[in-house]
Image 1: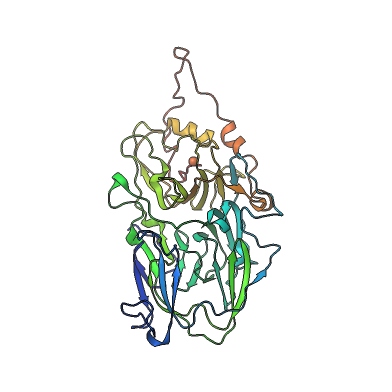
Image 2: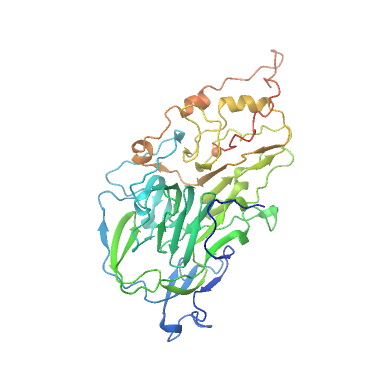
Length: 473
Ligand SMILES: [Fe+2]
């Protein structure tokens, strides 16, 4: 069955469907019939409209949700800056920190767990481009937290949509629109402005986040693939309404705004939405549901064939951010170099590994909780040893990536690397290029000068032996 076997069982209810119009009510009758803003909504609830796109966005792109809640969101004290000298996740507005735009290939050892912080303070900006104040670009984060958010705290980002990719540990997320349990091999998206709090029911967590400052994620067009395949719309799960009736406790509302942290107080729970209807909501997706497609004749398709979600730019076919995965799959192509080809790309490629083994070299390699970045036009491909093995491998059908899940955040933008990403995290592998590619030997032989390429004999299981993660680094 194409679904993950999770150790932690599901505990919440969901509605299914991507880009669907959903409605949910925790108390029957809480949704007004027909009208969105009747003079008196049912049960004395306040109506509040949450717009994720401009009012006038085209119908197929318009995202908005009507909330019916005990008190509206505007009832809070003024927001005040919090940790203003240390908390800054804006890639462009970092006056005290150089952002490094460098052409080198980068690879990171696994990022450390951190027991000392909660979700809000676990966000480390590794790389990014653009600026949330102009709603341009994206930020790439590593998160590592060891404690749940305080009981009466909520968080939201006004800067963009969070695409969260857990690598370790479970996220139990209460949002304004309902609850999500998100486990490794699942992803979730929490759109801009939606308040939530994160509990850690199984202890420390670690993972990756792409924050999208412009637009929203959508499913890629399928073109000649047809009407099904890749990530199917029915497999996306949307929370159902679940509310707290609390109008007496003191709550702290944390807000990430232009990369900085602000806090306000209010005397009522922000999780008081009794019913909602609309298209702007969080969702989650089990990556094992992905219907992976590939070549059944020769050559590799481009890795875009593995796109789960895409955030288009204004240039047709060009994404501000693609979320791409490399699931377990069969390689059957004939007379084909089975690993990815060497290439250079106008898009930048940030990769991570959720779980699985790679043919890791001592003190290096691409490991779970690690990462790599091949920025605009940075050459990359299989390392020398992999090339050698794959050039002689017997080309029988092979299942590759068994038990693994690698992913890529791909962007049309050149991303800058933060001081934390390049230095302070102390995870950059200094010898990445040297070990991987500088050791490649010429294989060229002029015709008639002896052996004409194709060195090495057939190697049983030399590539795709189940222990290798077939990634595109
Ligand atoms: Fe690549």
